[in-house]
Image (tube, rainbow, N blue to C red):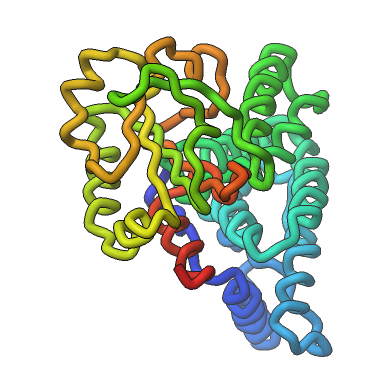
Amino acid sequence: MRKTIVIVMANALCLALLFSACNQKKKQASDAGTVNTTETVYTAPKPPEKLTAKEDQLNYVFEHYWDNFNFSDTTKILNPDYGEQALVNYVAMFPAMPVEKVNEGMEDFLDQAKQEQKGFDYFKQKLDSYLFDPNSPMRSDLFYEPVLVYYTSSDKVSADEKMRYRILLDLVRKNKVNSIATNFQFKTKIKPVNSLTDFQSPLTLLFFYEPGCSNCEEVIGQLKQQESINKMIADKKFQILAIYPEGSLEIWEDYAAQIPSNWINGVDENQVVLNTGLYDLKASPTIYLLDKDKRVILKDTDLAGLGQYLMDNGL
């Protein structure tokens, strides 16, 4: 992703105020007769003055976000400061919106984007990058799903691409939040055959890792130092199930000393998870948080997401 694009990770409510301020400056410039007709940064509509609640302002901006956007001007769309930044700011509002509203908004946006094939292809590539790339801080299967649904039925997407997007759609629909995590078998040092459902705990952190992976080692090190998590493990309120999915017993055994002793360390020696696509393991580590019934609370999360959940629930 281009470094010039600012990824807005702050509370999405701030965006409504930001857009409002930008529009106010634009209005002042207009009043002074100095409107810049070659605007290179997209400015979303300003909420009506009668909307004073921040939530109402944000809803208005989200619903009318693309009203001023010229989807037929591909020169502007292909300018990252205009097209890509506008998309990033829009996606940054998703976490503050109900899922149904996001789905409707994304369908409406793509309907408008298809006015020009070049513009549609540009936004398609950016959505794939921001919402699905494992290195993107904005990645989200929840928000990527409606995009994939649209692609698989769009006349702007080639037959070959549709086939690929159908495969991705099947992947993102597996082990969704609020669904029961798919059961699978694995080996531990204590027992040759175990199942995910064999291990009972109010909370389970399912941690797919790769020995020697620098990101994995960093996350393992940080989790190992979390006193609150270690206390929950000791109190049997939390368990960490670390799984090496690539199946090499030799590599798994050589790396075993790096896995904390209060974790459960397993290996999928038959590579069932990988070969059958039971879980979407597009990065290492891949982390899920499960409840006592093995229902998915967090999918493909990170330490920040885990920490936020634990804090929100007083853990």
